[in-house]
Structures are given as structure tokens and as C-alpha cells.
Amino acid sequence: MMRRSQRAIWLALAVCLPTLALSCGPSMSKVEVKVTLDGQPVQGATVVFYPEGEELKEVNPSGQTDANGVCFLKTGNKEGAKPGKYKATVTKSSGMQGIDQSANPADQMKAAMGGGGPPKGGAAGGPPGMMRPGGGPPGGPPGMGGAPRIASKNELPEKYGKLDQTPFTGLTVPSSGPIELKLSSN
Image (cartoon, rainbow, N blue to C red; front, side, top):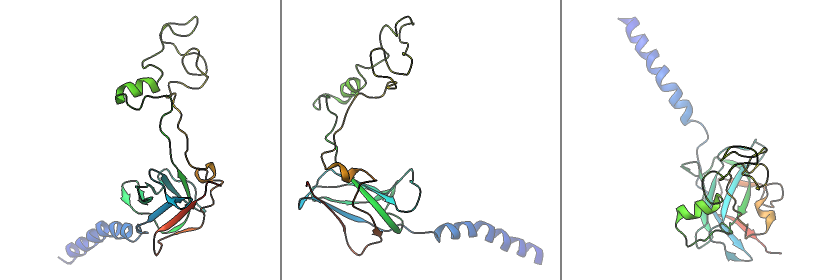
């Protein structure tokens, strides 16, 4: 009888301890960010936070600003960011250049992919649809390998979008209020 109750206790501990350990880890903190350029709110900017002193992660806290230049960071599908020190980058894409923005999405994708489908006729001396050495369709630059032929332009000064140039370092999470990222066009 005693052995049975001891086993039940050990079994309960074995099931509960991993759950308790996971819940004791760093919790997520709500992070509000406000982005301005020359004092004006920036709508549609993408803000990404990178942990300082750690390896880059596959999923970093990020968000996109609203009409007031405000966003709330999410890490993957979770609201917030883990406590710590961060660097931040800010970019704003102008969209797909060379693509008719009024076209339906399927036509936009075909245009982005260079007309859609495999190349006709193939590489010189090869069967139809064959890619040329180095990747990419015949006549295209090497290494393209079917990647979209679109370009997006950052509408903000480049230094804010480059991790090695960003002036936004030492940002602390959690913070007592919105984290302000003040950009300047100079």
C-alpha cells in the first residue's frame, strides 16, 4: 500500500516538474515601440529587435508600425519579447518595383517570377526547361535559380536597417514606457 502511494507521488512529480521548470523561464514582456522620422510618425515600418551579446535567433521580436508610428512586438506568435538588452533595425519597403500593384496577386507573382513556369526552350544544347549552369534560366544572372526578380527599396536611411550600423543599441526590455526610435533623414 505504501509503495503504491510513493509511486503515485513520484509519477506526479515526474509529470509536473518539467511543466513547472518551463513556466519558471523568462517570461515575455509587452513591448511598445514608437518610430518617428524627423519628428513625424512612420507608418508601415518593420521593427526588429536582436538580442545583444547572443547569437542571432531564427525568430526575433518584431512588429509593423501603424499610422501613429506605433507597434507592439511579437516573438513568433507570442506577444512581447524576453527581458534583456537589444539592438533594433527599422526598415520600410516601398513594395515590389517593376510589378503592377493594381494587378491581381496571381499576375503579380507571375511577373515577379519572370513570366511564370519553367523557361521555354531550355539552356543552349539542353532539353526544354533545363536551367543553365550556376542556376537560373538561360539569359538570366547566375544563381537566380527561380528566385523572384523583384526589388524592394528601403524608404528610410540605410543605417537604420543594417544591424552593424544601427544607432539603436542597449534597448532594455522590459521598459517603463514606449521605446522611442527617433530616425533622422540627415
